[in-house]
Amino acid sequence: MLKLRKTLMLPLCLLMLFFIGGCASSNAKILERFFDQLNISTTVESNLNLASSYEFEGKTIEVVWESNNERALNNQGVITRLETDQTIILIGTASLNGETLKKRYIITILGDTSMKTLQKVADSLILPQTIDASLSLTTSKEADGKVVNIVWFSSHPDIIDATGKLTLPASDTVVTLTAHLSLGTSFLEKSFSITVLQDPNLSPSATWHQASVYQDQIVGEIAPGRQSEFPGAVYRKCVSSRDYWLGIEVVVTLPEFIPDEKRKDDNPYAANTYRYLDNPSVYLGGNSSAECDTGLSWSFGAQDANCTAVDYSQSVAFRPFWRYIDGGRNNYANSNWKDTCYYYYPGDTVRISVFSPRPNFLQLRVELLKETTIEKYVQKRASYNLGSNYSKVFLSEEFAAKGMGTAKAEFKRVCALDQVNNEGKPTQKTNAASLNCIWQEVYLYRNINGTLYKVPMVATRFSACNAPSSFTNCHSVTYEGVNVNLGGEVVSLSPNNNN
Image (cartoon, rainbow, N blue to C red; front, side):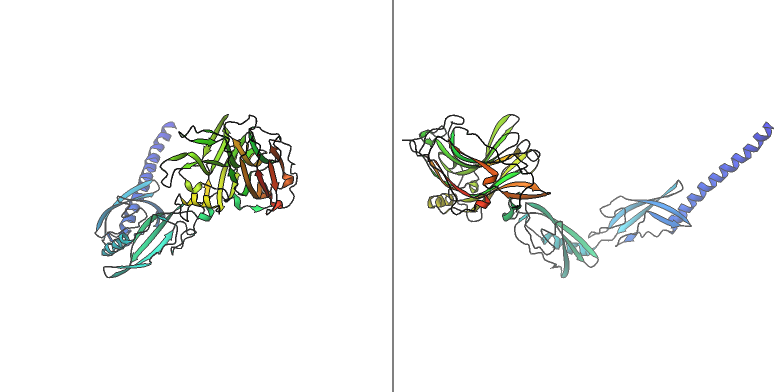
C-alpha cells in the first residue's frame, strides 16, 4: 500500500508544477501582450497619459513608470518643453500576480519655439524684493511679435492679491508671487520672493493693546493690599491687587525734569563733566515670583544724528529699559542708544504696556501717540534728522518673569525721581522735580471668559504709596483734565527741601 501511494504522488507533483509553470508563463504572456497594445508615443509635444493601473483581458495590471529626466518628463507623464528637442528614456514595470515585465521607451519631446519668447518675457519681469505699497502687475506683454498672457498667483492673497493690491500685514511677511506665462499651448512660470513690510499702525506685531475695555464687575476679584515704602528715591507708586492679571497699560504724558544744581558729582563716563544725582523715570512693573521693572528712564543718548558716539556729558531723553530677575541674577537692559527714534521727551504722550505674551515671560511695548510741543525738545528730536516717517513703536525682547501668565501677579505704575547709587539707602533731600506726569489712562490686562480685556485700574483697584512719607508737600496728585474712571491722575514730585 505504501508503494502505491508513492507511485501516485509523483504524477500529482508533476501535474502541479506544470500548472504553476503554465500560470507563470500565462501571466508573462499577458504582460507582453499588454505592452504590445499600449500606445506610448515616441514623439510628443503634450503630456502622456501614464496610469498606475490598467484593466487588460479581464485582469488588473499595476505599472510603475520611471523617467531618467523628471524635469523634462515626470513619472506621471507631465512634460516640460524647451526650445530644442529632448530625448528621454521612460521605463515601465508591469506586475501581475507576482510576475513582472519591464518595457523601455525612447521618447523625443519636441522643442517649442514659443519657449524662447516666453523666456524672453519672463526675463523682462522684475519686481522689488521689499515693498510697502501696491504693485502694478502686468497681465500681458509683447515679444517677437507675439502677445504673451500673464496670470499671477500669490501665496498670501490676503496680503498681495492677483492684481498686486497690497494689504499691509501686522508683521514683516515673505510672499511668493508666481507669474504663469502662456503662449498658445506653451507655458512657463517665474516666481518672486517679496518681503512685505508690516503696517506701521500695527508695528510691531504685538497687539494686546487692542483689547476691548471691560467696565463690569469681575466675579471673585481680589482687593489690593497695603504696601510699604522702599528707601532711596522719591516716588508715587500705585500697585494692583495680587490677582490673575496678565499685564498693565498706561497712556501717559511724560513729565518735565528740573534738576537740582546742588546735587551733582563727577561723571564717571565722561571726563570733565558732571551728572545729576536725581534721575526721573516713568515705569511699570510686575511681580509674580520676582520683581520686574520696565518703562522709561532719563538717559544718555547719541552725540549727533550720525550716531557715531554716545554723549555721556548729559542725559538727553527718556529711553526704554527693562530690569528682571532670571536664575537668581538681576538683569538690566536698554534700547540701543543708536535707535534715536526710540527717544521720548517731556511732553510726549506715549502708550506704555507690559504684558505676558506666554507663560513666565513679559514684554515691553512703547508707542509714541503725540509728539511734544515743548520747543527745546522739539528741537532736540529734530536734531536727529528722523523725518516724519520714523518708527514710533518700540518692542522689547521677551524677558523672564517666573509665574507670569500662570499664577497670580500684581502690577504697578510709578513716577519717580531715582537717586544715583542710593537704592535701599535713606532718601536724600533734593530740589529736583518731576512735573506733570499725566496718567491719562491706566488698565490691567485680564482674561475674562476666554477673552482678553483691559480693565481700568481705578482707585479701588490699587493701593498708593507716596515715598518718602517724611517729605512733606512733596507729592501732588490732581485730576484736572483726566478721566478717573479710566485710572487717570496727574502727579508732580517736588520735594524742594535741599536748602
